[in-house]
Amino acid sequence: MRNWQSGLLATALWLLATVSADAADLAPADLPPADAVERALDAHPQVRAAQARLAAARAEDLRLQAGEHPLGLSLSSQRRNINGGPDYQEWGVGIERAWRLPGKVGLDQAIGSKGIAEAQERVGDARHETARQLLGLWYARLQAKVETQLWQRQVEFLREQKRTTEIRVKSGDAARLDSLQAESALAQVEAEARRAEARAEVAQAELAAQFPELSSAAGDSVEPTMPGEGEADWIARSLMHNHEILSVQRAQERLDLQAQRADADRVPDPRLGLHYSRELGGLENIVGVSLNIEIPGASQRAKSAMYRSEAAAMAEDVAAVRRRLQAEAAGNWQRALAGVDSYRRLKAAAESVERHADLTRRAYDLGELNLYEVLQARRTALDARLAAEQERLAANRAIARLLLDAHSLWLAEPDEDEHH
Image (cartoon, rainbow, N blue to C red; front, side, top):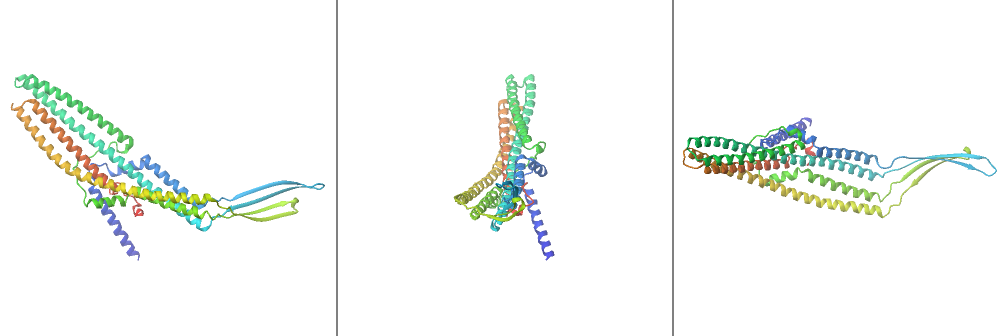
C-alpha cells in the first residue's frame, strides 16, 4: 500500500513539474525574473493586508471554537439586623455559565473553517490583482523604454544627416535650404526624444514606487508567440483557478452556515449556575443550583432571514463574477491572437518602409532626390517601427495576462490543490 501511494505521489509531482515547465516556456521572455516577482508580490501592502485578514480569520475561528459563554462569578455581602437580637454578617458566592448545545458547536466550527477558507482565497485574489497591476506597470515601462530608444536612434540619424548636409552645402552640392531643413527636423526629433525620455522616467518612477524590488530589472526584446490549445481551454483554466470566484463562493457558504446558526439560536442555550451563601452568622448554609433559559423573540427569525437573503445575493454575485471573468478571459485571448497577427503585419510593413527610407537616402547622396523626401521617408519609417514595437509589447502583455489569469504564470501556490 505504501509503495502504491509513493508511486502515485511521485506521478503527481512529475505532472506538476511538467505543467510548470510548460508554463515557463509559454511565458514571454521580456518579463521580469520570477523570483523578483515573488518578492515584490509578498512585500506589496495589498497582499500583506490580505494576509493580515487571514490571521484575523484564524483568530475568529479560535473564538468560535471557544464559544461566547464565559464563566461568570458573583459575590455578595450583606448585614442582617434583627430587632432586639444580634446583627449578622452574611455573604454568598456563585458561578454560572451558559452551555452551547451540541449542534451549535458544530456549526460554529464550520463557520470558522469557512471563514479561513474565504480569507485564504482573498489572499490569492490579492496576489492575482497585484500581479495584474505589476504586469501593467512593467509593460508601460518597456514601451516607454522602447519608444525612447527609437527616438534616440532617429536623433542620431538626423545628426549624421545634418553633418552630411552641411558638408554638401559647403561644397556646393546642396542648397542652403537643405541645411535649414535638416536643422529643423533635428530640433523636432530632439524634442520628441526628450518627451519620450520623460515618459520613460514617469513609467520607471511608477514601477519603482509600487514595486521597488523590480526597479532595476530589465526585459529582453522578444517576439510574441501564442500559447498552445484553444480559446475554450484557456477560458476554462481562467475560471477554474480564479480566487475571486472561489472567495465569493466561500462567503456564500459561510452565510448559509450563519443562517443555520441563527435558526439554531431559536433554541436558546441553557445557563446553569451553582451558588452558596452563609446566613445568620453561619446558622444557615445554603447551597443551590439555577437554570436560566432565555425566551427567543422575533429578532432571531429576522437574523436568520437576513443571512439567507445575503447568501442568495452572494450566489448572484458568484454568477456575475463568473460571467465577467469569462468575458475578460475571452477578451484576453482575442487581444493576444489579434496582437500576434497585427505585430507580424506591422513588422513586415516597418521593414519595407525602412528599406525604402534607406533607398531614398542613397538616392539623395547621388543627387537624385531632395532632402525633404529623405526626411519624410525616415519619419514614416520611424512611425512604422514605433507601431510595430508597440503592437509587439501589447501582444506580449496580452499573452502574459492570459497565462497569469490561468495561474500558469507566477501564481502557482503550495496549496493550489485545495482549490479544486
